[in-house]
Image (cartoon, rainbow, N blue to C red):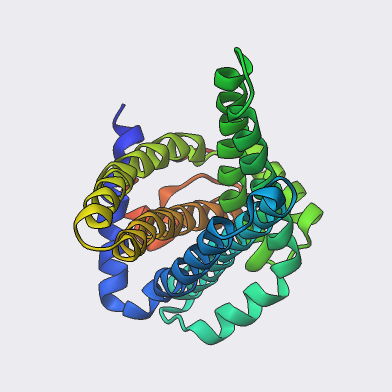
Length: 282
């Protein structure tokens, strides 16, 4: 059972790594600086779309807006994977090389963003249906979206660090997972718990703050706080997933190369919390 909560020990290691190199938080800062204005912009566009155009333009703006927001999240996830790789392999990480790598991987990142946006859009449509599909449809699509989003962060290191193409990165990550001695599946459960806790302290207060500010101050203030808090959730949770899965990915690659599952082969932030894992062989 303790392996499921190993992720919380890893959070402390991430904080220590960030303390040594504050530049590692650049992806979070960029995510918030770009995503909050974009989110507000698309919300304003949708709000002022004439009623007679909402059936067509509203859907178009929704898909475009969701794709843009997912691309921002995933691009910053690529920056995270690249910077973590540089940090654990060389001891230094900067935004320059990370941006170059991630930019080259942007076609694959765009594919992930488009598919995620489509899942979100279909979920919204299903919630507008009548009968049982109004409940079951969004639930099923939500599970599929969660699996796809997790796969995005798992595959991101192959896409960015190894500079694989989209389909090659899928194949590479699948091969590592099939022969994975690192218990990354357990980490997925732990990261899900972390995301849930983060949502409880950001998303719920975001709705409460919006309601209070809209009624007592100004709707604009409520909108600003709402999108800042919700995007903080996406930025921080995405960052933690990016760091965690990148470290596991790098460990799995080294295990493959050495044909051993020794914890000593893991990157330092992960190695410090998995000392009790028995070494195995491929």
